[in-house]
Each structure stands twice: as structure tokens, then as C-alpha cells.
Image (cartoon, rainbow, N blue to C red; front, side):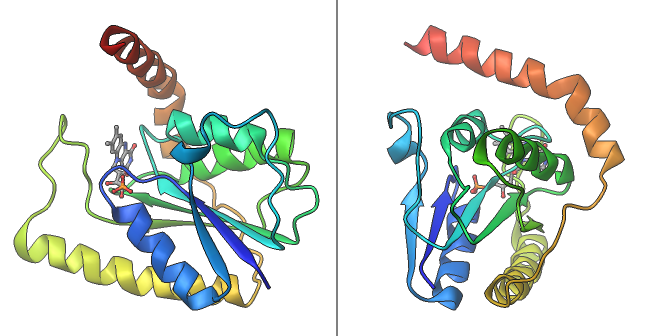
Length: 188
Ligand SMILES: Cc1cc2nc3c(=O)[nH]c(=O)nc-3n(C[C@H](O)[C@H](O)[C@H](O)COP(=O)(O)O)c2cc1C
């Protein structure tokens, strides 16, 4: 079965996860989401199995991923999964992605997962170092291999409930996206 994994990564955690999953699934193509940013309105993947792999940003999706997902037509896709890497709290981002896919993609996510990786939000904290980082990476690697196995078996895994991160997202995400837009405008 052919698989396409669409990925976005800032510092490499999500790309590393996407590579492990791709290697496990075989006949798999990795496609960068930023490379598709200028694409026309609709993206219809030519594969039976589709994945989206990206980080959690402010308890939600990076805006580039949210915009990409709105263009994705998955009505002809057999199996669709998402894997989000995060520093520690981000289940709400899976619900956001599922909602977008339901509204625009013509179906729901079949399987959705979060993986804890080294946090990289440097304005708030320093990324973990030394033994702590090695522990997080080792656990993350194990979890990604388990996830790859579940995807390979075509398991249905709905997003778990995440009331705390949904609440935090409700109060902070819109401001985060607005601030990002203002920053982009001032850089232009
Ligand atoms: C702008 C920004 C916001 C973030 N917000 C969250 C968050 O809400 N929850 C969380 O667990 N991690 C958060 N993180 C950490 C990343 O999700 C995590 O480090 C992820 O693995 C980074 O993946 P990447 O290396 O593919 O970019 C944030 C990181 C950045 C840069």
C-alpha cells in the first residue's frame, strides 16, 4: 500500500518521527508541507494511506499545517493518520486537526497520536539537556516505533479527551496565531 506522509518540522523532531514511520511502512513518500504552501486550493493525494506529522504549537497546530489541512481532500483515501510531536501537552491539537479534516477533508482521522520529544519553545524554557534529553529521546523513539506498528496494522485510534489542553488552547491559541501574523508582517 502506498503511503504519503506530509510533515512540518521546526527543529527536526517531527521529521525524525516521520522518517521512522516511513521506513516501517515501506513504499512511503515524505512530502514537506512548506513546499506545498503555494499550492492551488485543493490537494488530492495519490496514495491509499496518508499521514500528517508535525509539532504542537501553543496547544494547537502550526498555522502552516492548519492551512494545509484545509486544502486536503481525503475523501478517496483509505486510511488517514496523524502524529504530533510535543514537549509535553498537546492532545487538543489532534482534535483541531480532526475537526479541520472532518470539515474540509470529507472524513475523520482513523488514527491519531502524540509523542513526547524534547521541547523547543525557547522563549519559555531551555530545551532539555544531557541525561534528561537522552531519556526523552529514547522513550520517544520507542513510542514512535509502537505507533508505526499500529499504523501498519491499520488500527483505529481516536484522539483521547484532553480537557486541560483544550482549555489552555481556548485562551491562548488565537493570540499566539495573531502575534505570529504580526511578526511575519513586520519581517516582510
Ligand atoms: C512556538 C512553539 C510552541 C510550542 N507549543 C507547545 C505546546 O503547546 N505544547 C507542547 O507540548 N510543546 C510545545 N512546543 C514544543 C514542540 O511541540 C516540540 O518541541 C516539538 O517536538 C518540536 O518539533 P519539531 O522539532 O519538529 O519542530 C512548542 C514549540 C514551539 C517552537
